Image 1 (spheres, rainbow, N blue to C red):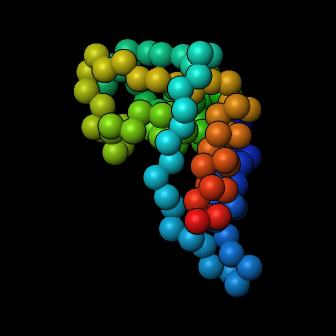
Image 2 (tube, rainbow, N blue to C red):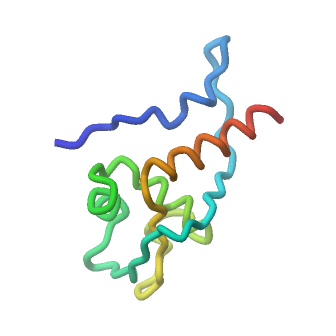
Amino acid sequence: MPYPDYKRYEILKNSDGTTDAMPFVNLPTNPSDKFEFWNTEFHRLDKIAQKYYGNPFYDFLILYANKIYLNEFDIPDGALIRIPFPLVKVKADYEAALTAFKKQ
């Protein structure tokens, strides 16, 4: 059974117990990225995350990689979506973006 094994907002926490607002995250394109054509009848971001990352809770990374969509319901049939890959690299890119935001 998958479980959320990644604290995606941890970097945004402050010493006083507050959390900064989530910034826009731009994940860079990598040659190792995967691509799939979206089918609204069969696809969901959590299912794709499970397929490529082994955990459905990384669906947010796929959405960040496809920044023209606000949520998976905005993705039209036949759209080519990018799945950033591998997970270790994607998490490092995500953390780098949040760390850069914190330093501003």
